[in-house]
Length: 193
Image (cartoon, rainbow, N blue to C red):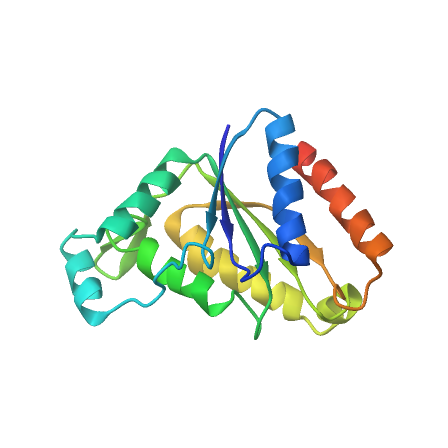
């Protein structure tokens, strides 16, 4: 299985970076071919310009977008690894979606009806919050955020959401507690179909 990880944290030395390392290790142990896009480390240009938007309407894509679209086409499964900032992806992650999941690649339109083009692919979300898990769930932020990402991005483009992992209160947790969180990544990967 080909797995492509889109990593959306500015530091690989962060807890999100530890999640990335554990995810790569666990997937490789399950014989996945794994590739990673580290948006910050690679200084991904997350700004969709008006010119680029107009070009994409005519099926013209910039080289960096074509490279990403090739990676997504190659992948059977996408993993989005990110800290929740202001209720969703960090800005660089949202910009990645804006630019890469473009018209003619990720979807088309028939009149006003979307036609998804990334069918038969799965996507998983692995994210962290400073808020405790219980608080994030009770406030309904978890449900709202996951549903919004799923319906407005994944389903819109034909991707099937298959697995969500949320690690809460990561700033306040002890190193031992964080290590326990990381151990659950292996089980999560094993449970994916």
